[in-house]
Image (cartoon, rainbow, N blue to C red; front, side, top):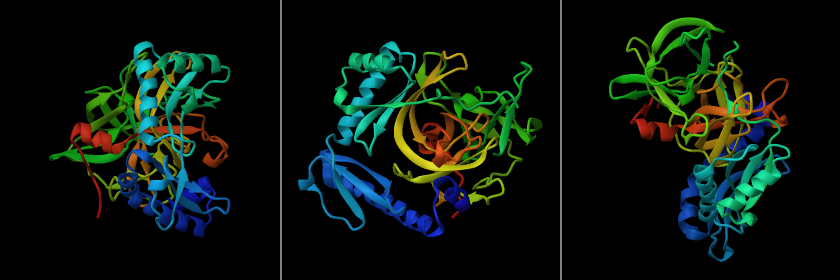
Amino acid sequence: MKAAMQRDLGLSGPQLAQYIRAERLASQQEKVVARQLGRNFAGTWLERKADGSFGVVVGTTSMANARSVAGVETRQARHSLASLNTAKAQLDGQHGRAGAPRGVYSWAVDLPSNSVVVGIAPGAEDAAIDFIARSGLDANTVRFETMREAPQRRIDIEGGRGILRNPGDGYLYACSIGFPVTKGSTKGFATAGHCGDTGEIVYQELSQWSLGVSLGSFAASTMPDGNQTGPDRGWVQVDNTHTLQPNVYGYGKGDVTVHGSTEAPVGAALCRSGRTTGWRCGAILSKNQTVSYVDNAGNPDGTVTGLTRTSACAEGGDSGGSYITGAGQAQGVLSGGSGSCKGRQGRNGGGNSYFTPINSILSVYGLTLRTSP
């Protein structure tokens, strides 16, 4: 995993070691600083400096209440995190009432810019402005970001531990395993909801598009379609004959042991694993993102809430796959993305991807993550 992080994030060995220390500091300080600053808190994130090192940054709307913490930079912000979350919720509300206009793809709080970033297609500025105006949101809190490609679900019917389903329509559908879990004595794994319907059988993928043995079936699954809104999450109950391993498959780069699911901060580096593109790494860009997916014809394909956006690239068939930090902390399962990994590394514009946080899946379904001490 370290080699993949160095490759995709452009880190030297010493820079990677320094990053890991900064990530640990950010995780330790985030809740402490949030309590200290109260309503003035504007978020915590990791930021790369000009010399390639990483620093922890805390935003506050009042420097008078800020306390000096070794290794942490305090920065003046115009908007508190609470007010930005409220602003983002206004866009969610407008979408719930009337949907998102064509070309408006996503919206989320962006901590470094202290704004709500709305992802739009080229030429969709007028539609986005109208969407914001109808929500009642203060335009001063918004920043537009042009997305050259629309976000789509990362499921592949064209032909990484991979999984396949065979619904009998003449196609095989590929996805990836997220994280092994248990529910009482029942074994299973978390994955994306759009990877299969509740009750649908899932098969091992022996090799690319080659059906293996039955692993089990979807115990629960949810994914909005068309103009619907909701989460993208599911879990598969597997037969007790199968063995759950507390690892993420490394595709020749070394497997990574899962030690827990402590949530990493914005700016943190992480890697993802999927059956199509293997190991790809990037950084967390924003959290609680709302994404309106479109199909190949540009029609609405479901709006998913509560996603985390990353700079790690992904492609069809990677859906459901794992996101994990260098410290072995599970982060989530792939929902979708834009762009591709072909011929490019994530740091050079290989697209963005979105994941459903693993802790929300564990909580909703009453699951326990399979870990190793």
